[in-house]
Length: 426
Image (cartoon, rainbow, N blue to C red; front, side, top):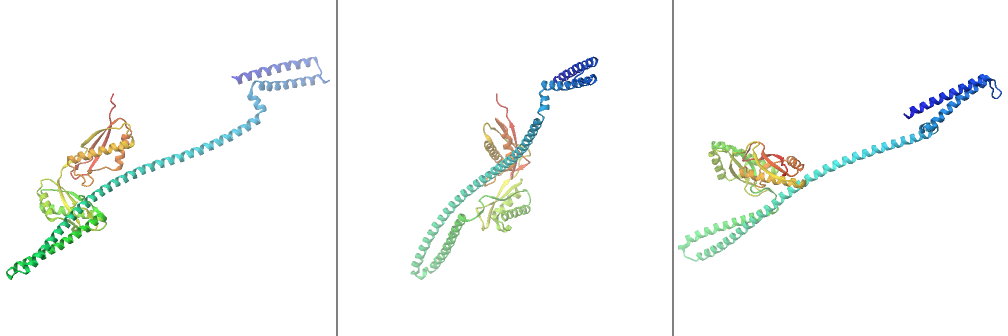
């Protein structure tokens, strides 16, 4: 609006000046006036030129007086250009600084992401080390128990050895006294001499066993235990109510599996004959399975702590087999309060829930691991998926466990864990 008004003013002003100049030129021409002694025609031309100069001068004067932009365009254009160049240079520098800052921010974000990944890795390693520490503590406890048991047995054998030595001395004294008797006692003397020799052999045998026990104790203290007492070497399900020959064949296959497991643990080949099972116990197991109307879970377990280099002594455990849980069958549900629990509290809550599931499934008939007492398997990804899911919830959360697939008494039990947010109480 301001520009339109300025143009209108300039048009009106130019028209007025042109009108005045025309009238002045006409008067000068009619009156034949002369300026500076010039002819009237030339005087009229000069007046017209002067009038045009006045129009131009007045136009620029009015524009300069009315607009700061016009004054800038007429008198400050060079300064304005210099300022524009300076501003453009500052803008370019600011753009470069912004790009550099964005690049540094991206590098910082990448470093932050890498740090988070490293923290997650360290947490996983810490949990693995804690689990390994607990396993080693349990192993040390069992070794101490075995050590105490062997010491007691060793003391008993030493006492028995001393008793037999006293008996041997007594019999030797009796033998010496009988040598002075008459020939009627010769037969009895020879009999007692034979008993003395037998007792001497028994004494040597006990001394040998005592030395073996001492060596066994030393091995327990310093040796490498491959299988702990009661640890499962191999397990499987054998169908019952069949001929004993077929059952025996299946048991031999299970024994072969046990020898492969022992070979894998020892790092060397072990034949089936190296896995020693008491023959009457083996035959009894064959008959029990053959006469059973149900399938049987058979476990081959270590009869004692198996030290590297010793023969593998094992025993058989039989359990009736059946389907304990069907696929997606409900096992257990528990409410968990998460208010202020944090990430560590969520992990502890899930671990406690899994222990309750383990106890419930064991009570229903799934056979637990003799060493660890566990009956199921759950990988770390599934565990942390549940932890992360309940971490995003507040208040009370209900955890429910379901069987993943049909599970018999042999196991293992695989789980499906579901989380449900309970509504807040009014």
